[in-house]
Amino acid sequence: MASLCFLLLVLSAVVYGFSGSDTITAMIRQSRYYNGLQAMIEKLKNEENITIDVQVIPDMEFLNMLRMKLNSGEAPDLIDYNIPSVYDIVDPGRNFADLSGEEWVDSLLFPENVTCRSDGKIYGFPFLGAPGVYGFIYNREAFAQAGAGVPRTWEELLSVCEKLRKAGITPIYMPRDSWAVQTLMSDNFAKILGADGAQEYADCLKEGKAKWSDKPEFAAVIDTYLDLYKKGFVNQDFSTASYEDAVKAVADGEAAMHFNGDFFASSVLEENPEADIGMFALSMEGSADVVTANMSAPGFVVYKNTRNMELVRKVLNLWSAPEYASLYFQDRPGYPAFEGVDGGSIPSCLTEIREKYIESDRVIPEWNYYVMDLSTLFESTLYIYYTDAPTRDNMDGADILEKFQSDFEQYRKDQGNSG
Image 1 (cartoon, one colour):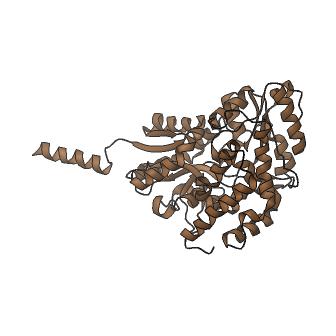
Image 2 (tube, rainbow, N blue to C red):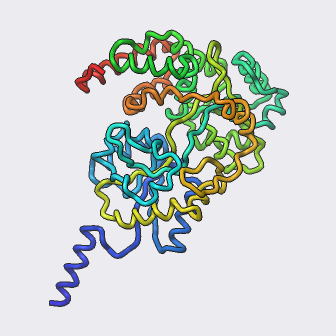
Image 3 (cartoon, helix red, strand yellow):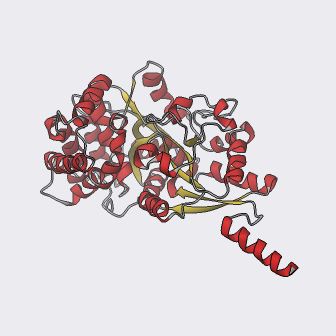
């Protein structure tokens, strides 16, 4: 009888997830499994006997994998994603745990950055409190080898690219990861419209009062991007290369530049601490001389149906404390989300960006910020068009926008939406 009772207890523990083992699961995109995060996980194991069973997913596969796991009801306890943009990609109330009442919320420096606009709840645990800015991250040694200086105009950029190409250096590295490629468009769309104009145009689009093809300047931006491929200024393996390949290429000097957020510079320095890296902002012709910011920060959401909520709660409380959260920035300095956390010294490569733009208040949100609720549609259509277009001679910016306009109209129809 005693043996039977013991067996039932064991079976119950397995079914309901209370096996007595202090283990939780996490799904993390490959490009964000930083050394600092690994150090936080290791500290949990060593000091609290808490194991995080990590599944590292290639960036290109992450969103589909996330949706599949949520639909199957077998999602991990912790899910890596950008906050608050994930709220517009996946229904947070249906899929994620409400963290609004957690202890660490009181220590957030900018709680509004992780608050869901639709219901006022907090579903995400962030690591960064301030957004990153976009620009070209470049290898100074590669520039010097080609006898190139830092460009100040787009025409100068093309001249620099020609010098780099002749020196046998890939001028601009582009991966197949569509989220990375689209940053150049999101940056320049916002610069063309300005903050007020971007909000106005976004509202008109979502209300059906304007079309994506109504802005020829948008098509011109895409054509300028495609021209980089036509001129041979992009790595030849762009259709198969990964984001991690981009990091390594710039870190080693095989490639001179990559356009992305300033977090890319940290990744390069993590790959090669000896790399001499700089960053400059550049606008296409007719665009304002400002930098754009990514208004979402990396962090975790918690699966709503987790069976390990108490353990997850303990982990997040620990991670918000300075002795844990400061580890996140040990190799990647930044602006922490929580009070009392040491974000490290900002890399010297960001000095010019900080002095010229951030300190003079010349920063505006990227275009995606104004249309964040369309993220799911972008991921499945527009961003894919950007990455496919360089392999198709007959597709230009106007074609892409017209094609996407059809997708957008169908999306609005499917939503039963007139706005």
